[in-house]
Image (tube, rainbow, N blue to C red):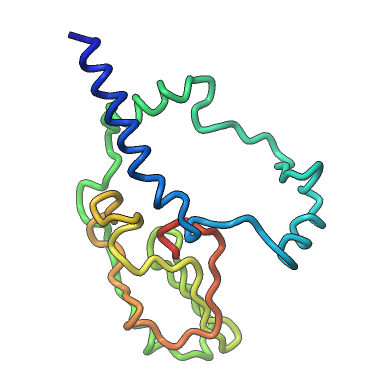
Length: 169
């Protein structure tokens, strides 16, 4: 009984991995730096021997576990309180109505921020959809998050993308 279940799980993992390859290999998931950006990276004190090195120890997400064990636990273990029991409290600020001369910082949810500083409107790591994955069913926002949409944003002077996760592209 256990062997057929194991075979099914392995087959599902292989099929899921193969199906995700076109998305993972897509240029939108990030490319190695080139040209001036590569020169800047190579000049960094963190860049040695052809690789980036953290200055602080950074353990892997699996700790001492085998990667397959970690994936199995991730897929099968139900995490308590992983999602809020009720929608997150929210006050939707009308960003367009804020005086550009007033220095302001508004958290838009997830890792997204809207900032006004010295008369400049700055948008940082925007997530302007209700999901953060190539497919809408994979990673949905919590209830009550992300009431802002691109069309409700004022004209932005500076857009900052600090990392190339799919949800910010």
